[in-house]
Image (cartoon, rainbow, N blue to C red):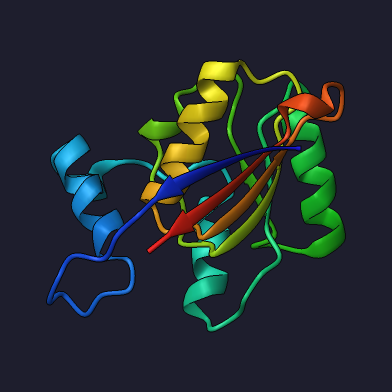
Length: 145
């Protein structure tokens, strides 16, 4: 399994756990709040705001819509996120999920790296991005800070 570490530091004196992610959002995108949530993102944010800690799966693969719908039907609303094929992962505002497992089968290498950066930018501490067909492309993303 290939491992990548993306470093994230906490700005001095902010007292915010994910302060760097918030300041990076504003720097890169101007008004971060104008970024849209990915499909099923509102359900995940609703679960998080209700105090739940959902076990979220992200689908960024060719049959992602079908797999995401099946996962949601099995585990309920708030358990699924989706990156539609061809979309830029950094153009989304990802819900603040601390740990995540993603199916990235067939996702281009560039978009795989962009997805990793976007997840860390938005506060994800640990993500496993897994390719079912090419195991050498599996990526473990760890945000340090």
